[in-house]
Image (cartoon, rainbow, N blue to C red):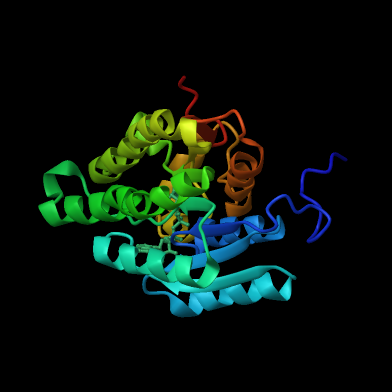
Length: 260
Ligand code: NDP
């Protein structure tokens, strides 16, 4: 059988000496990304906003497995909170080499029922957050003439979805933002890419009622949702191998969207 997993700690460690910040790293896809990058040797900063216990648990699992990690509170939707968090990280850890913008929320409603606060909360947390972190972290990356940024979008940003006008707009915005930033930052050896997952087995997916889950599975050619680990491996690829890949979207979606 083909070996698809990276080798255990120390044997496969292209990220030794690198510091990685994963927003919303406390659970779901973010926790899997944190573990994956730590497995490759990165010192991993696991960001959370409310879930301190979950963040500590993720950190504990990484450290127990031989990796290096710590948690860091910060509300990515809030500019002042991000500024303070970045200052703390630079002071304690010296730098940020890798930024994974993963934090996200849902406030699903049909457009007729969607309030302006449903709209603003999702745009602030899923899209403005990416500007907030990049605004304070990119200057450090420019100074060190290197960096890797991976923004977690969604196939919903590419094809739209019923009841998700706010979320689709935020996720599509991330793709456009990524492309422009990639053009501007390539000269500093900073690669900026997007990962667009399909449905993934996290709390977000488990909150979907079972009859609707069945209908969704019928639309996925692979007829299953992804495990968080399968998204994390795509992020690892972009962080460790993307020396000549920038401004791209990596679709990890079981075939639900095949646009170009
Ligand atoms: P979860 O709901 O499982 O986890 C969300 C994470 O985001 C938590 O760690 C949460 O922290 C954090 N977070 C939320 N708001 C903030 C904030 N204001 N500041 C800092 N952190 C915050 O989500 P998933 O793992 O399912 O999703 C992760 C990303 O992947 C999201 O961007 C999502 O849109 C995207 N995605 C998910 C898919 C899916 O099917 N699950 C499909 C496609 C994309 P805390 O615990 O502290 O609240």
